[in-house]
Image 1 (cartoon, rainbow, N blue to C red):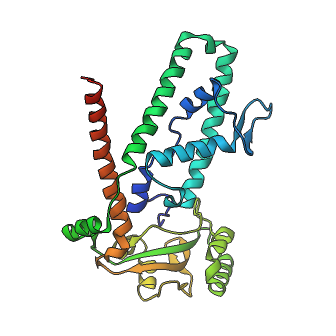
Image 2: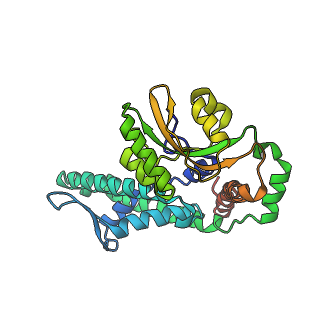
Image 3: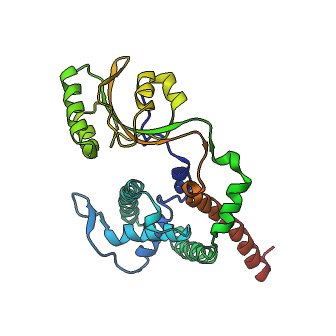
Length: 299
């Protein structure tokens, strides 16, 4: 089965995954809230049946913005589907943490010395994290630096093979009528291919049917009829036939094609700048920590 984008990540997505937009510092945030911080506001995004556990929009947004800030990023830097998945994970994590906290209160653990002392440490941890982020967010990467890196590392940006990105409807049941109906609808409305995927595809977790970038040579090893069909196809074209591969039938749209060889600088400039920015932020972080240690004579 051809792997979909949700199971493989391009280099850009791998870089963006390093933001760790997950559930960082949720425990600390809730600990501060329990200690008398500002009340949450906005829509209730989750409520338990007994109404004892509620997750508010402001709490979720705060976690996202705090983590973006710590990485020097904006919401627009993150793929929408990744941001939405992260938002759902944060809602679930906050809800579980609040439920755990309720259980702890029922046991009167909030009067324990370990709890009261941890509140102050949580405040220090959050403030220190924000301070370091404020310092390293001053780091920037110029176009000249990115171009210099590109020119010095051509092998890193050279495709060894022609690459295609596809959108697929997979029929695994052997239903000829269904495959024919899917092809008819997809060719009649190529711009609505994603809707046809939802309606007809039988492949689990197909999503919108989009694949990762696929080297043609590798695709030919496992799905030769698909590789052959897309060779002469144009970007945006739906192949006008049902393609059979073993016991699977595919309706295929070509989303993009790229020849082997050196990738144009404009195509990778933003990725290079992100990579260099991460590297420079790490260096700035280490330098700043050392400066603070020296300032306060921390050996």
